[in-house]
Length: 535
Image (cartoon, rainbow, N blue to C red):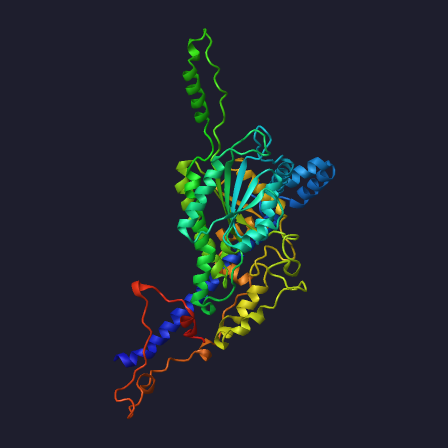
């Protein structure tokens, strides 16, 4: 028989083997599932059979009688014994409850101890202020104002870096004698170096709190860097390149240049060292030849403590940068870059005994420091959330279709709007004030300090929860039917590149293209934005 004649028989055999495998698998599953039940029935029948001798018969246990005994014994137990019995039967649940209660108790005790701690800056022997803190931030930020006022109240001298006359006016508007502007133009290297040199000489020179009082030296205690906390929220495809350039200049490059300008001041010991005073006294004793007068030696000066090195504190928001949600590319990019820069800076200054602390901020309650018409960056004047759909009206129609629904859903969620938990204002600013003071006085030596509502929670979520699950919880869903908005590129026509010849133009005129900038630079002006594929 040929192959074609054997084909029907082979198909029948294949079908038979497939059915045999199928039914044998189902039979094995059925037998496996009901084997224990069948064995139990057989044991019960054999235990109750009268024809089996008593010596061979296997008696089954009586669970009902045991349960009744246990119930009777449980009724006679005391409350303490019942708790012990419940803990013995629910070990895993009891362990989880103990760990949860222990963590809450530990945090409550730490918060109570931190609230009762006496926090005041050190004073000179004559009672004058001697510790100086420099804040490199915009005076218009609520964080800057709150932190400067609190540190000034605790006995520090505050200098806020100002790059314009408006910033100096904002600092003077605080009306505090020990909160002063420090005029430094970070963008001008020569002027910033000269200004910092004058500031170093000012710190090194002796000062008197009031005329005629004993002079004392100032000590640089710390430098606090607070970048701008306002970022654009939009899909990457709708952000012009010029906006990215401005963002990196104002939010990333300016903080880096600020720290770079203060590095010579950090590494130099501007305060008077104890050895200088001791050496001057010994030189005066040798000039007077006091060792030859009698057998008495000149009194040795009292030993003074070596001044503590200044601290560097870098602030960054942590909720968005922990999970990197969609439509937050500016904030995620800048915060990630500042985090990496802070780690490198800490590694470079660690051999110099200059600690660098990265303070990751959560959500805070800025009531009292923000204007009345803008109580929150995420609430409108009426107190309701601004409609995210209004922002999408400036996008093109394909962009609204591709990103609009997900952008609206993500913006209305608690995480997408920059809040930690819906309906909660945020942590009190006192927690931030206490954390900053503990870093400045050396009681907190951690490299990373998380402060604010949601800082710890979203740090855990960003480290262990999958990104897809986080996006799904914010309402991001798959977009269907993208082919309806796809338009294939049109080939260039002859009229677009060559103008028809006429009597006035003897040679063909071609469209001139703009020359590319030298050295491989990328133009980010308005010309590039006008040529966007969706505009």
